[in-house]
Amino acid sequence: MSTKTFLTIHGIIYAVFGLGLFFIPNLLWPNYGLELNDKYAVFLSQHTTIFLGGIAIISLLFRDVEEKSVYAKKILTGLLCTNVLGIIITLYAIYKGIFYGFGWSDPAFFTLLSILSYVKLKQNR
Image (cartoon, rainbow, N blue to C red; front, side, top):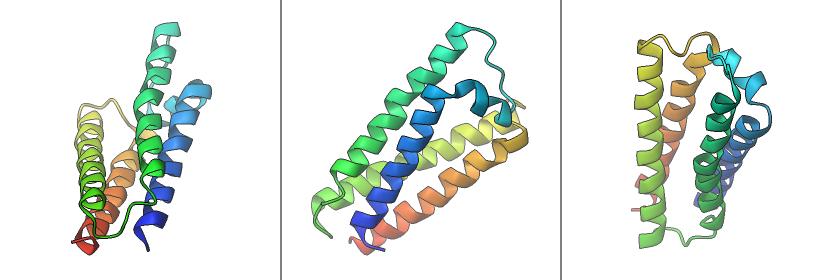
């Protein structure tokens, strides 16, 4: 898979989750075992869209980066670190009993994206 394809898929995945957490948080979060009890919890979910949307935008803006360039290495390193952080935080949520039900999918998702980011980073050296 080319870096362009990877960054496009990565950006789309983050955009879809960001839009979902903004427009239908009451539908998505209960699948992970979370309850949105008030307007503040809904807003915090929508606030998360800033970061998910930002990662999506950056991924999509950099999809035309030249293979094996310093910029390709930097964007892929940043995405790798972001996804590893996602693994750590979502595993913590499972460990603390915050995430259950479909909650296992988040660390799986971040692990898959971490592996793909790592493979792309290695191919760009």
